Image (cartoon, rainbow, N blue to C red; front, side, top):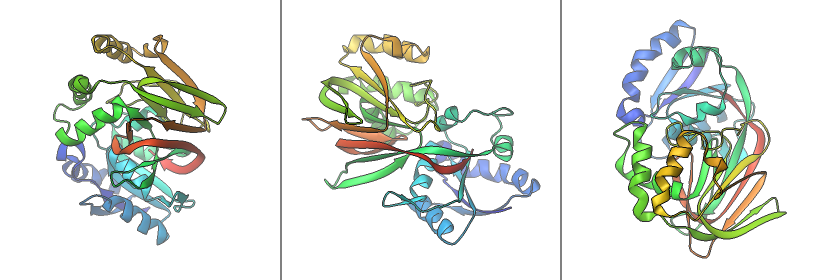
Length: 304
């Protein structure tokens, strides 16, 4: 099998390219011929993936973390429409967290990324779409595979984008604690499928296609990537002194039982707010509210 391959050298704290050189001979030994391209600069992976599918490649491999997979996903879409067709997007997870894997059950040597990739089935998975206001004030639309957030989580993602992840998975917890100074509940209106509405101060809004974020934190453990809907969690106003206990509950998978947390399912979600709230998807800060989210059931063929 011959695959156009796109490597994000910045993944895994700049170590992904070195990992690739160590692991590539195993793929070659299994019959995978990888035509590798090291992608530099924003959008390079998306453009490479889009061009490869446009040229008729049946499968494309990307190497990196959740952010790399997020960018590659953009290459499978053009103006919100799937352009990869029946093509397969394969992912060798060499990032810091690789949170998207949590929603892809796997039986085998899951700690070995090459062994996992070689034996992983091709799955038809749902794709989330988010439309929000970009930094330039214009509307933008992006696809996401794992988790999108409005509020505190987006502020944490912004901090991590500026500071990096020098402490590995612990960087996510440290960034959350460091964001205490930004802890605020903004009044927001959340509409689900045009039939359910909440208008209240909200600290965090999670729109999940996958199960985990922030280095393996089980944000919505029951979320599935192939059930045709998005899982929504709302966290109401919370005093700063209660945040440590909420984080502890999150680590234990008990946060959904908190009285300030409300959980539901939906296919179309709309968030508006008088004060613009930040929006992120798959760890990438996109813009601000107003924001709209919807699901494309089974839209992507994924090997990971």
